[in-house]
Every structure is written in structure tokens, then in C-alpha cells.
Amino acid sequence: MTAPTPIIAPSILAADFAHLADEARVVESAADWLHVDVMDNHFVPNLTIGLPVVQSLLAVTTLPFDVHLMIEDPRRWAPAYADAGAYNVTFHAEACDNPVALAKDLRSAGAKAGLAIDRDTPIEPYLDLLPSFDTLLIMTIKAGFGGQRFIPELLEKVRAARRHAATGHLELRIEVDGGIAADTIEQAAAAGADAFVAGTAVYGADDPAAAIGHLRGLAQRAVSRS
Ligand code: DX5
Ligand code: ZN
Image 1 (cartoon, rainbow, N blue to C red):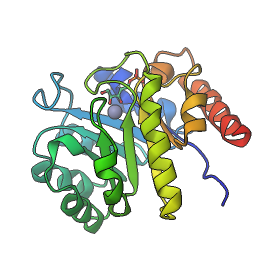
Image 2 (cartoon, rainbow, N blue to C red; image 1 turned 135 degrees about the vertical axis):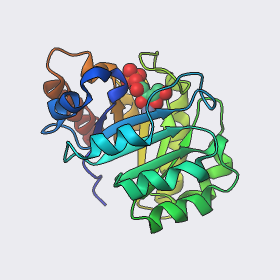
Image 3 (cartoon, rainbow, N blue to C red; image 1 turned 135 degrees about the horizontal axis):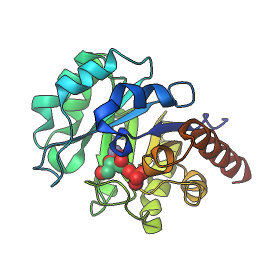
């Protein structure tokens, strides 16, 4: 089985929130997905944007939206993002007591379903739920803020999930989020990640589109070596 092409998903958390439409267009030709961090000031201390902004943004770009919900009570809010047209909707395992039911709702609303695992959450209890999901997002920092330092030890969860997915012949995107940059993406790809969120490394670069291309090349080479 050949490895799928790596997905690069720039996170608009690191973009200029006064010009979100322009910031989406800057990466449109280079990115695979646009990563949109929704934070509610309850599940995480930070607060970002919600459904109305995401709806408006969906209308101004052709990029598939990778919505990362860092919110409490995702069963109440997540399906609306799928209805709005998000490509992938990811919610946190820690915030949901019935992840499989919500994944089903998201898929019936026409979106891919994603499960996110925060820094302090073990992966093992969730491995058997993975057939219900299209995306598994492993945080490589503590969720809540951009610009934090990548924690390499968390890649052990990526390895465990990739092994499990291979054994079960699952088609699962394993996404890493937090501190992904030119000096960390190769180890994440070698561990089995095939979707990479990058905020600071893309929007902090002089040429965000070129930064995306560079990251994709590094991920591709790391996979072909491993
Ligand atoms: C943080 C968010 C990330 C954030 C990553 O909780 O989920 O998507 O934007 O930012 P960087 O790439 O700067 O670590
Ligand atoms: Zn995120």
C-alpha cells in the first residue's frame, strides 16, 4: 500500500484575524486544507471564532475546511459545522462522552469525522473507536494556543495509532497539531502522521505558500526514507 500524499493544513490561528479572507487566499493554491481552530474559553482558556465567522469564510475560499473544535459539548455544536460545508470536523475526545455517535452524525451531515486527543490523554482507550473516524488528530502540544514548542514524546501516540490502523486496514488520516515546522515535521511523518497542521511555520513565514511547499517536501522525503 503506498502512503497517501501528505496533507498540509495551515492554521489561521496564526493569521491576521482582521483579514481572514485575504489570509485564506494567500495559502489557497498551496495548502490542502485550511485548519480552523474554534475555541470556546471553556474547554480551553482561549477564545477564537465560531460558526458565523466560519460560514463567512467558507464562502470566500475553495479550500476544504479542517475545523478543530476545542469546545465543550461538541454534540450540540459540531453538526452545524458539517452542515455549513466543512470538509472535516474534529472534536476532542475529552469533551465528548459518546464520540462514536457524534462521528456518525458528522458523517451523515456529509463531513469527515475527526477525533482529537489532547496532550495528557492516552490513545489506548480510543483505538477501538477509530473505524468510526476519518481523521485522528494527535496534539503535539497542549491544546489552546499557537506558537508552543513541539513535544516529541507525544509521537508515541501517533506510532500506536498508525500500527492499529494498519492492523485493522483502516483508511485513517493521522494529523499532528502543534509546533509543526521544518525542524519537526520529518519526525512526525516518520512516526506515521500524514496530515500536518502548521500555524506559525506558515503564517509567520515571509512567503506562506513557499513554506507550505517546503513542509510538504520534507514530509514526503521522511516517508520515503522510513
Ligand atoms: C492550538 C491549535 C493549533 C495551533 C498550532 O491549540 O490547535 O492548530 O494553531 O499553532 P502552531 O503551528 O503555531 O503550533
Ligand atoms: Zn488546531
